[in-house]
Length: 140
Image (cartoon, rainbow, N blue to C red; front, side, top):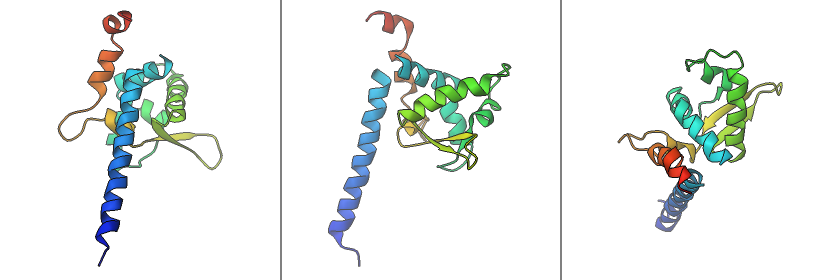
């Protein structure tokens, strides 16, 4: 039989990790390059595309993501990859490189989950849109 103290400790660590991820997501939503890259990814539906691609941990390359967008620019994958790398550097997305070191793949992580609609249709995207809105932004 499991020790009740161990179970409680495990739950507290899980709750703390979720709270830490949520606090970081709020910091990202309220902080110019990083928030603008985040807004661009949000506007393009990048987080939703990755979330709908498969189970948690699913990884997509910039080319695979661009294939889901109505992009016509032949350099769209390269341009998107730059945005995704920035987000990965700030731990908004997970990033891994293939064995040849030629292509990066991106996945959602605990922070980016807050920018994907949950089962109730709630995410931090509306807050991000408000914080980066021209009228709101120019008031500063």
